Amino acid sequence: MSENNTNINWFPGHMKKTRELIQENLKLVDAAVELLDSRIPASSRNPIIGDLVKNKIRIIILNKSDLADPERTKEWAEKLRAEGSRVLVMNAESGEGASALKSLLGKIRDENNEGRQRKRPLRLMIVGIPNVGKSSLINRLTGSRGAKTGNKPGVTRGKQWLSLGDDIMLLDTPGILWPKFEDQNVAKKLAFCGSIKDEIMDIPTLGMELIGVLSGIAPELLAARYKLDGIEETPLLTMEAIAIKRGFILPGKRIDYERTARTVLDEFRSGTIGRISLE
Image (cartoon, rainbow, N blue to C red; front, side):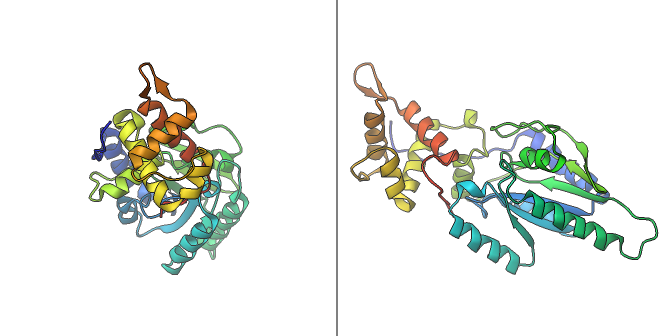
């Protein structure tokens, strides 16, 4: 195991199709609901989506708020509101914030219908990068399991129109990443949070790099979770200390870097290590 950096550049064909799908169907919708990951609001804010929906009503949802530092999330919400966006903080999995979103959508629907003799339903598009919680949000809004969910990116495929009741219609789209990661730090944060498929990643290196990040921004939480006496001089040494504490040892007293990395990644993504914001 060497301390090599990962280099991420990923843009599968279905994401190109998704961009085209969004462009084709924008004329059918009145508003766009963009989900961001509360742990990485900047990195999960797709510039392609911003460009595509710039002429539509835009609602930004800071989702997965239960996994992020609440103070940091509050700061991000204020920053985005100052830019002129309508912002809500949510945990779509538990339903926290769902009633506030429904209320806001109803208000927008009524504003759009003001002065109209024939009322029109509000048509929405939900957009966001993979694994940000779109399907969980749709299930909350529809009160059903109509949208397929999964804890891996790329579960949602194709186009679906769903009724939310109260004259509100929703167009679901798959997650979309941008074609090229100009900033590898952005790509790594997306990978840490599970928005890039683990299957294409070097997991031991990715896990080690996450350990390095957590050692800098949340050393106490990292040490407490893995019962470490302290953070080691390098991420690799800290990773090995975690492996020893957890008993992740292969025959010949070799460190199981793969298992250690997957454990740290999974426990960060689930919030088991703590509520940590990377931005």
